[in-house]
Length: 105
Image (cartoon, rainbow, N blue to C red):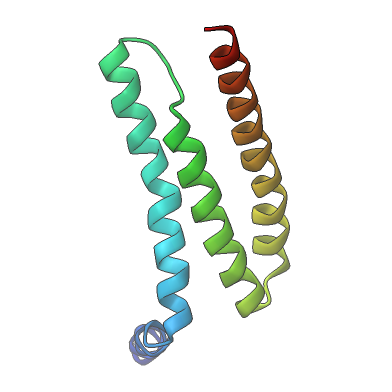
């Protein structure tokens, strides 16, 4: 029982670190993209990925990447670094498509 109490005490101490807020903020932003996608799909009655999904993905991923560098966790760093490339690329493709569509219209 003492080890369990010690474990939760350590978690509490770590939560006081301002970087924990960066990590939690990143996780909240990153996770919120699923709600955005779900709501957009329900509204259109088909599976869609709104542009805001990619922005939330990118911001959440960059916050979690910063946190990964802070805690020196290569798993976080590798995962969120390479994911960010995909999100930036998708936003670039969307922007390019909108520019071409706008020029035609």
